[in-house]
Length: 140
Image 1 (cartoon, rainbow, N blue to C red):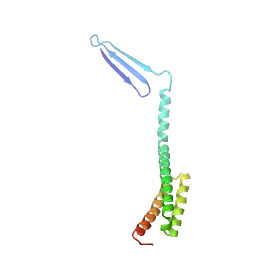
Image 2: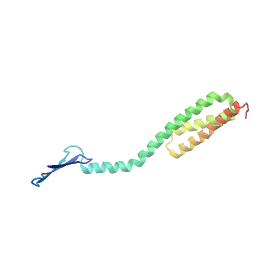
Image 3: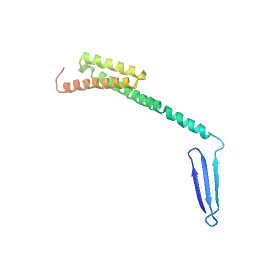
Image 4: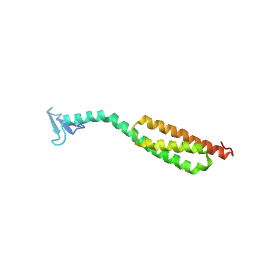
């Protein structure tokens, strides 16, 4: 007896059996009586494929918002910690950048948010630069 069982991804099971001694062969296909039809499944798969790009963009935007939120908190914490050691104009620039960065949290433009994040990272380097000079005993 030779038995073959196949199962498709949409719940169709096909069983084939062949008796090697007699050569008799039989087949049976079992379909799910409940659930979705093949047409409904194909339609859902096509819809999912159509929305995949939008879903990916939403995911990227959410991940970027998380980074923006974490970065703005980190910059604000550093500013509060070292505010008395950096120039007032630099502190004001950093505060403005934090405000702009937080406004990006409500924006839906991925590229604009990336640009604000890049600008914020450049401003953070000013804090590092001032701290480095302060450790060396120099001031700007």
